[in-house]
Length: 274
Ligand code: SIN
Image (cartoon, rainbow, N blue to C red; front, side, top):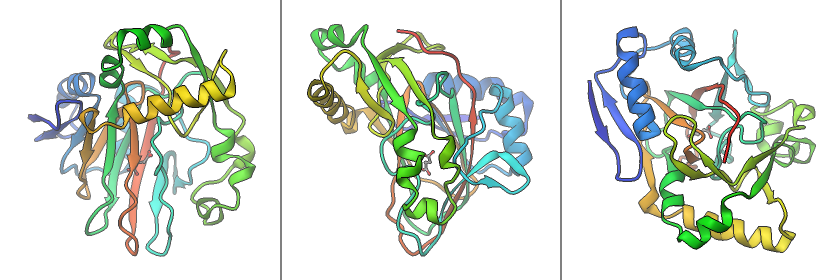
């Protein structure tokens, strides 16, 4: 197995591993814990192999809103058809941060890729936190923020292309509001990192709306620096797993006129602590 870091911030690509092989799991798990984003190249895996691999990490966290893969309700389809304009996950976000117990990780399998583009960007929230001044870190430590699914998956977005095309649904289930520390201690590594994101975080508790908006906007600008990022260029067959407690991600929507189909499984996490 050959593990090659993608950037100084986070991420590694792994060649010569097989997600179906139990003997490869410990090394894959260690790489995941070290790099937060791992790209397993050239996998020969069907939905059952994908599920079996995910279950080695923990119980599956079934997504409420994405259309599932036929006969596999635990696997969400992340799909953009060639005549569609909007991609799922275009904004910087952390999957399931609106849950009381946010998902540990997501495992995305590239089934059909466009001839160019359709990359995914990731940010290291630990690197972003480390680069803040001690004074700003001191201000943020101890604060809590509210995250919600309502404005992203609820009734107000039922006119969106993703809802109308059936890629997203179940708007009535978008009732999650969760309170998490703005700075968490990562449950595996113990590293401190920011846990707010532009899509699901609505506000920081205890600040006025203007103060909360200004602090979040400053943090979001800070987090988007290229030094904290890596970019995954996909080939069909690749599987990328990321740690939702340590990263943001964003799907690049630059392949209009072509189809892109991914299968995503999300794995349960633990409650987050400061
Ligand atoms: C997601 O946001 O989970 C999907 C990312 C992607 O399609 O690249």
